[in-house]
Length: 296
Image (tube, rainbow, N blue to C red):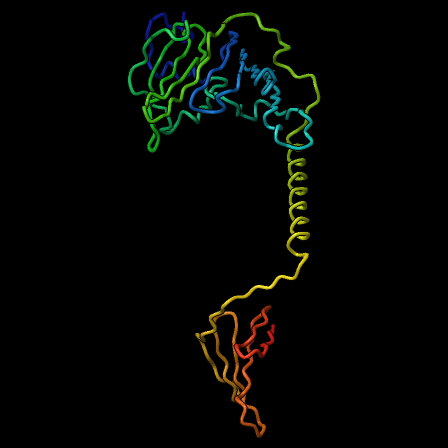
């Protein structure tokens, strides 16, 4: 009898969908194979049973979940000071974010809404996959993606065992459980972590500290290598006036952000009247070498 309760060889898509949303009670152990996505030379091993999960990467734990707590080694791997301690989170409030998410954990019900590989392209049929009798169906690709995406679901247990994008443009994307063992005895210790761990709050605090240390290191380098010598920058500024006004005999005008004024000089001299340029924070030198002092 299949997980749907029906003995028939074929089922409808609306009967298979609840199976994909569930947590099979049978155990599963297999090597995870991936193509066209992720790290090609990495070896993954997976154990599942109900809500319990263990994923190892090259023989070391990557994700461990006992159904209530999820320990994520991957999440803390890039944080200085984590000391290879996993991040412990409430398994009911976080999602598995490791490799082969569609095989290692069920998709959320909301993920089956919309058009992102959620609609069958044809009927659900039965065929053998990795030595197991499976239901298989091709799911339509959404706009701007290639497809379809074919999935295989074990008829006896309800575990998804593989998926492959059948489009020639998908660059060979596929992932599957190689020679899966289903219904074997698994020790509960596989799904627990007895060592030290850190919380989400501690992880964010360490990330903040790491970012602060990086910023301070960068500023120190800048001070030692850039600000240690006087900086002189030459530039050409267009001072063409865009607005002008006259107040009490003086003419004011200039581009946005600065202004120049021409004021009458009541002395007996043949000199041109003084020109003053006010430009906040900038000292401007005229072509003749006379400084214009900025006025804030």
